[in-house]
Image (cartoon, rainbow, N blue to C red):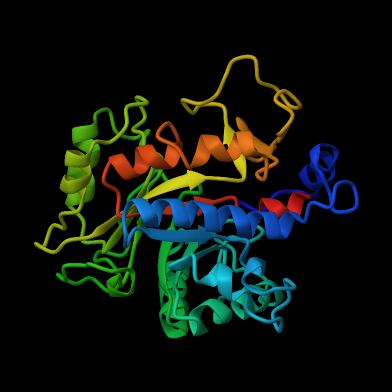
Length: 319
């Protein structure tokens, strides 16, 4: 998701349980939460993939590029996602400031050295910027997606062929040469239309929402259909899951909820209406996400996804 404005950082302090108030360490609590998610999912299905998006300061013990790698955290994940590495940090279709790129690269190098797959989403729409994004990410050894819509609701028509297109049967994350990030299905009137659009492409990996825009969950049979590439190859399919914010359009949302009720629910994200910061270390929130048969992650596992793409890992920055 797009960088949160400073005002969100200020407003969200009111709902935080910061270190010094109750000895909560927000950075470590997010590591712990990701590890719990990974343990639950991989115990249920060995080989299930866990990829985190943003918040890559968690990769080192002290949150600095030259810090010791957080090996226990690294062991719980299979890949790291990063938005805005080369384009989109301040404005979409504008190059990210070099200093910001270097800062993000310093952490991604930690993950790459640990053998993790790096998945970059740049936000750009000018053909020359798209070409440059793919070239720079490829040179760095990352797989990437140049998204021309921040809402991630569109299958790009440029370039004519998927960067790194191949007919491989992709069986593991390192096999993937590219990916499609398509979590908003609003452009499609029916699931069948969405499935047909995806299976007409040759992306190696797909990130989608568990739910179609009519709020119906994708079934195991539909996920199996989505694995088919147009050229006869097979792809992996990951489910998007926000763990640092609650979303008021999800099945778990209750009409009486508002900031402060329940106590772990915080302020609304001004950049993404309907998304609310949470105290992600709270047991009640964690039970919504994983660890039981009614949890969001269990629904993802039951639908047959190959893995999960965890968003708002960087929520610790708000505390």
